[in-house]
Amino acid sequence: MTDESGAEVRPADPCALVIFGAAGDLTRRKLLPALHNLARNGLVTRDLAIVGVAMDPLTDETFRARLAEAARELGPAGVDAGVLAAQQARCFYVAGRFDDPAAYARLRDRLAEVHRGGPTGGNTLFYLATPPAFFATIAEQLGAAGLVRAPGTAGGWTRLIVEKPFGRDLASARELNRRLLAVFDEAQIHRIDHYLGKETVQNILLLRFLNGIFEPIWNRRYVDHVQLTVAETLGVEGRGGYYETAGALRDIVQNHMLQLVCLVAMEPPISLVGEAVRDEKVKVLRAIRPLTAAELREATVRGQYGAGRIDGTAVPAYRDEPSVARDSVTETFAALRLFIENWRWAEVPFYLRTGKRLAAHDTEIVVQFRRAPLALLPPEAGPQQPNRLTIHIQPDERITLRFEAKRPGPHLRMTPVEMQFAYDDLEGDSRSTGYETLLYDCMVGDPMLFHRADMVEAAWTVVTPILEAWAASPPRDFPNYAAGSWGPAVADALLARDGRRWVPPE
Ligand code: BG6
Image 1 (spheres, rainbow, N blue to C red):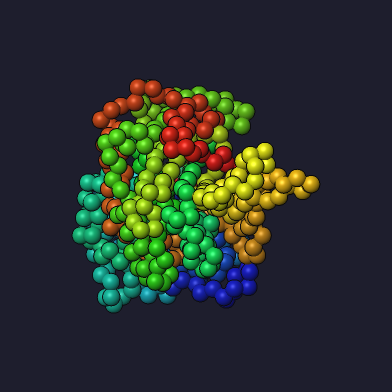
Image 2 (cartoon, rainbow, N blue to C red):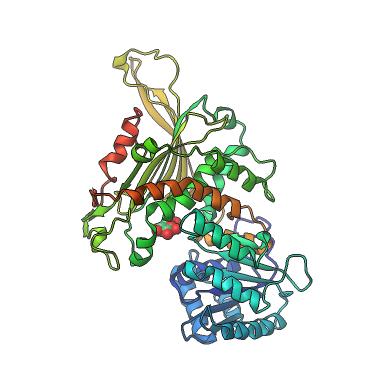
């Protein structure tokens, strides 16, 4: 079988995919469209069974209608009517409470029928798309109902995908790991980070390790500093209740941004299969130097948006969003400076910033190189700008390299110019929700893009002291940035103190 670009693809072995939280937003917006997209591209066969589980009183028919509606409205590449009809025929629903053993007995009977009705070989993938409070309970109930088969036993594999957030600090993440690992083997658990499903994020590894020109200069000798920005124009979009328990540090930095740091900073893995990549990533997390008491005060910044304008439209302050406390001290912006203490990166600052309701939607990584050692041209030729490699992750997927060139004319004058690679220029279908790769990888048993228990704990080890320091001294200046701005002024001061500035997104 080939995909739309003509490349050979291997469909995943058929399985029963059981989605807990099947009536929720994630299932509608991402999982169902991604499953249809996978089927359209021949990456799953029509034998894949989808079993939705939730408290809502749906039926097989109404769940099938939801699949069709989600694929039509949100499918990134449109709908194939024949493929959709086949998918609907293998789509089922079990209503029940996540803590009710009777629901699991019904699920067990339903799964037995599903496995009898198609060549799934008993393979079962459980997807926890529920609020995090249910993660451990569901795993334990699955175990008690005899639905978890140990790896290597006959009768098909059992795997588990766990959505974020995975814990809310180091202690709770450890406790969740402990409870999941009492039922599942680590090799069966796939802790998802949807950032790792993005094409350009995966491309960071290939850019660095499949090209000979970047690695020799990818270190403290040539790199001045690294900036990572995850800027959203969106607010909390009706998720105020969740966001009040999270904040920007937990929501974005602990998972997505630290994963980006790992991809930029890791050593070359010995292979792109198996555990090699995850081994290198966890070394980066462990090498992040704990912040000193002074750094916790001066090298971390938090903010919360007040009212403002986004694209010309007035938007309310965070504290005026639904389900948000009027005196909330939850941060909707976070910035920090980290150092990775190893031979490659010692003394190279990594600056991270993320926020909601910022001036532009933009996720990018800037690797700024040191200036050339000698300024050959006089000051009137213009300031000599450092070289920069920018990996634009969204909304447009591009990589640009900035360097100095001579301005045409009789005088020696400089101007910065850019070489650019745009992902859109490549052939192939990159239209995806980001979940296709992750679902497919889990079905074929490739763990590379998922968080391992030790990675999650190492990431919480980085972030927990900041959370604690912030909790111990509540902010007195919230809201401290207007919606539609680039965050609080103190975030600029963080870099200015080091003689640097945030690179303005284009
Ligand atoms: C999620 C966060 O993990 O990532 C959201 O919970 C955030 O708050 C989202 O909006 C951003 O993802 P993306 O893919 O739109 O950058």
